[in-house]
Image (cartoon, rainbow, N blue to C red; front, side, top):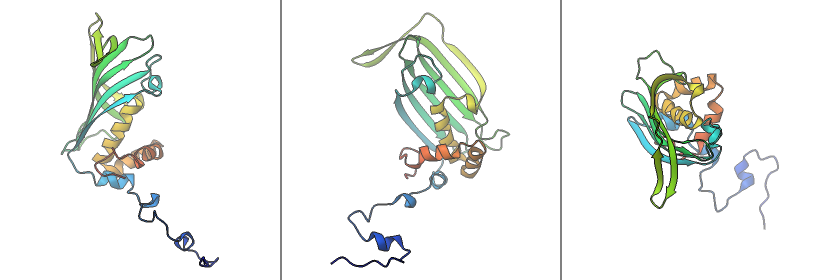
Length: 206
């Protein structure tokens, strides 16, 4: 016979009873994004390759590209210097295909720079043609020489996938201040949602 439950009982566990999944961690018991950032030790470094094939033109501000294959090498060194190195290729559509390298840096403290403001960016890119072969992607460069530049770029001008990697690094470098700055920019909720259940973000899982 089923047991009776007091209708005035305020404890949800008494209403729920027991079940086969009681040992699974519930959403409210996951480690917060801020706590994961705080618990990530320095130096922090990892490399990941991502094949972007959704909204590539929008993410990389191109009218034609449909595919991007990019390696992200992200790190915060023991002095809390941020370095993000990206290298990859963009192709698809009628626009000339492109291969590139770029490094994004912010100096260690003490510094006059603040998170999500300006980053020193070195970039080198070359146009050409990408073909799929049995060995993967083959890039044939055009006759034009590669372009190279060193600039200070605002946070808002950076590509979305780059901003996501830098947001993670800034949270590792100085968790409380990075969260404060993201709240100032009205971007904390969005990045918290991105990182909350991402096991690849930070050194501590959700």
